Image (cartoon, rainbow, N blue to C red; front, side):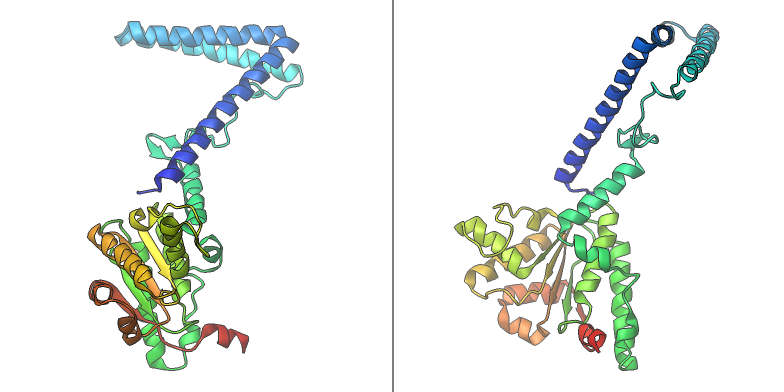
Length: 325
């Protein structure tokens, strides 16, 4: 797993807060009950005393003596617990009223079970990954499950070709390993499913615990423009472009729609070359043909993309137009 470090830190802090809040709430309930029913407060003090004795016995005894004494203390603890539950019920409280109530009983709001991430924290990490990837809305609507090959039935050859692309991309996502999976480039006109399959890949890869970042070419270059010049008509204006070089999977959509000049081309080359040298995966999608791509970008970009990426040409008829009909 290689969860985004910022996300991990934020969620760990959230869990620490939840854990402390749950214990504080239980303490307040115990104090409330002790004021209303002093006998229950006395039982709580006896339980605390037994707990301390258990720790003391475990530290200073061993063998048969340890087992015998621990058995006695367990029996005493169970008797006090039973007496406390009866008193709580008799006074109108639920029998577990003073116990700590965690949001997740499996991990006790710690986020981990036996040193492994709990299912609840993993779900939080995945949800946060969706939000930070830049694809949250698209991934809610686009997945491998709802990608329909029916839109490519205009000819058997097109259907067979797109079925192959679907199989390649699905296998890529399901077997993705950060630092080991390669990069891909999607060529083809608008409305042929490039963004849909990009979203589906992102959804699957994030669920595996990897850091995915989606951007358009215009948004990407807007971020770098702001970092360098302090003004931008796009991008998040954060000044931080580190994720372009550090995330497990970078998806750049609509490459070819950005302004084409020496600065933008050098930025794209830097991203592509750096990620290749670090063995980090990138997916590029473009409406350009391969010939148009070669004419638009430096040889150093085209040689790396066309030579080291898996090239997937999308074919067929605009799906959006088919849906309108």
